[in-house]
Length: 117
Ligand code: HEM
Image 1 (cartoon, protein in one colour):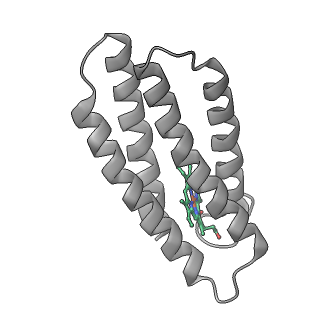
Image 2: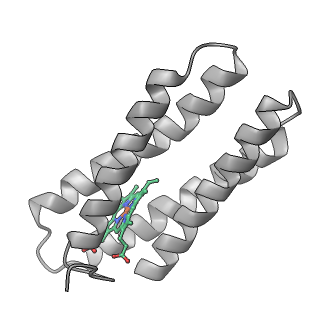
């Protein structure tokens, strides 16, 4: 399941890059935005499966889940604010920080690929 979770994350990033490039060219992002939003469901489903697979759910898992959901909110905010012509610099900084924290958490938590071993 960690592989499924990782796959959906990589897909989310690819779709976000496509959307950012299209936005910079002033092109229509509607379809890609819809695909990305569908992909959020997969991110959450795989995340929640990992969450509930744990026999006793550690506190760090709640933190990971809340940050994961916040991350999806940030994906939406950078896209929608850019679409409305509003500044996104600070949001991108928040985006990068939460993203790195999630990866560090994801890879140090007990399940799946453990990069520290
Ligand atoms: C875009 C948002 C998200 C990012 C970038 C992210 C990132 C990651 C990464 C890199 C891993 C490690 C995978 C591995 O060990 O192979 C992971 C695992 C996990 N994620 Fe997410 N995730 C996100 C959303 C969510 C959501 C919404 C949930 C909801 C519950 C969630 C729950 C979990 C759980 C429980 C694990 C397993 C932790 C462990 O290894 O023990 N994630 N995530």
